Image 1 (cartoon, rainbow, N blue to C red):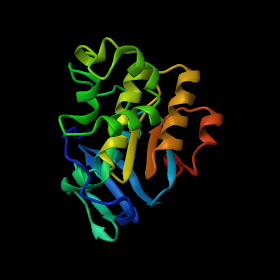
Image 2 (cartoon, helix red, strand yellow):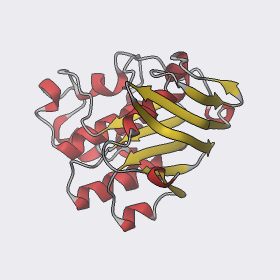
Image 3 (cartoon, rainbow, N blue to C red):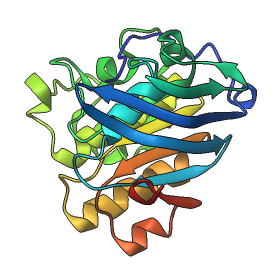
Image 4 (cartoon, rainbow, N blue to C red):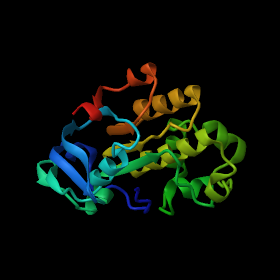
Length: 225
């Protein structure tokens, strides 16, 4: 789903006002997904979208980034048509996923993706993402290994969070971001995301604790819409 180019956001966080889906559906063969969904998310909101496995949560995120075009309905960002517009990916969205996308390279490269970034900025996002102890122990030039084999699951998630913070895109999309983690670590990752990402957060999940649900501004049960 995600775009992992080194391109920094072309849209300032303050320029993002809202995204909206109106009567939105996606067709997959003879199956209809999203079920004529109506949804609006405003700038700065932290929104949890709950639905059971198989509902089409990842499909929804792919619609938001322009990878999948709606068969019916409308999708707008700031009042402008965004249906199937892949360019919005670069402008607006960063990602944290269930399985972090990690390159066989250093911690620094995995965060910066090759962009020229000051050490001060790198350390700042590492601190916010909860990577300070790892950096102090291993250093920014630490080789994380193929698919991050030298990192724990939580460290891999935090690496993606640091990457998202550095990219400065207005909206963070989280796709079942903590479903593979134990409850304690899941709570820590949610605290990190929701307290430190300054823009809009949209997470899709099928199961999350009541304590973590309370961290969000709003919870939408997609299966009931």
